[in-house]
Length: 121
Image (cartoon, rainbow, N blue to C red; front, top):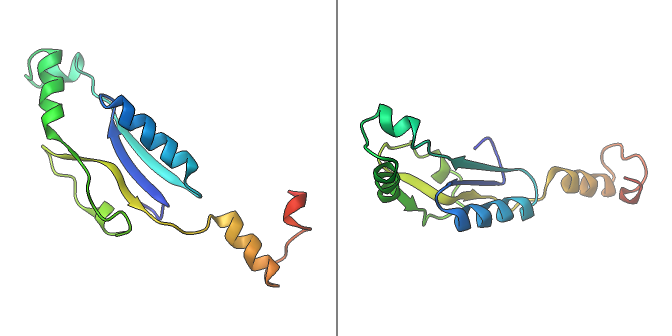
């Protein structure tokens, strides 16, 4: 997850979950990476013999697995993608200070080259 503070994945058919995940990503300090998987039932379904749009959505729905993992485990997000099962929800969460806050703390302790106070920015 390239060191992102929060990593999540959701699918467009789960609208309330998508909204909650985006809200969590925005409120999380630092960088958040959120993958939203969107189906294209009209094109993808026909090209893969999955039948009608409704049949494709139902097929995808049975493969979605809400994630119940330890989000503090940085290796959990590195699990390989397995066709037929999509982990969704928050996949990784790292509670650390965002870069700006960490840098300002460093400057207050006498390191770095802070130009003025944090109130000037």
